[in-house]
Image (cartoon, rainbow over all chains, first blue to last red; front, side):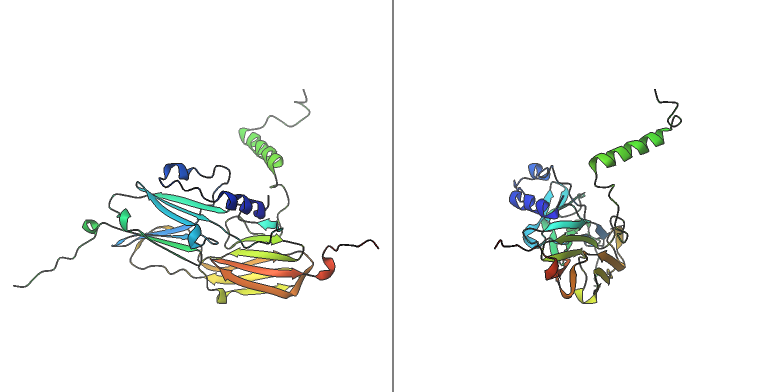
Length: 140
Length: 147
């Protein structure tokens, strides 16, 4: 199984986007998706998810919230010569996918995502009423 | 009917082991020998190697590194890549998962014998280091004209 054929198969099919989640989640029955390693941490403002997705450019990245599920998907693109054959392959798929169930205090309307050098950072803020507030004491 | 001649009745685990062997033989290519310098699955960085008649391309999946910190060397057909990825660990936050690799790494990859160590190019984009090594002219397939 060569990387080339996998990539070719995928670029012709690209990622089907149906807009309303459900169907798109089962978009790739043949190819096993890669599970990108993540770091997840929480501070007083919200939760940050950091994922390694090398080879994914901005236009091949899909970060989406479906109900309370955060879905991260990306298409790996290698610069290959037309007749290249694989000699060795640690990565045998060209699709990254991972999802997380969010909880109610997170504000899914204000998710911010940033992609740099193959590292995706997603910040999900907490709703204002769930952030620890400092109460100012006014001196009369 | 060969029950006595073959091995003793085996435990469930032996059966499972044999089943696994059968599956691996059927669906290969897991039973092909592993390269002597290959690392276990999931090691950082993952590597793919592709070849054409003209060159060999090595792809290193190394997101979020400074490409200047990489040390890439090629001796004959042995490619050595070492470097480090130092992830910033946030203070005063609670971590739920820390799956991403942090620290020093080193990978040695044995390439086809006919690569030319004098003609190597490397670049970094979207977290992938691509190292392209030209192959020697003499070993390329040549079209032979009939006179």
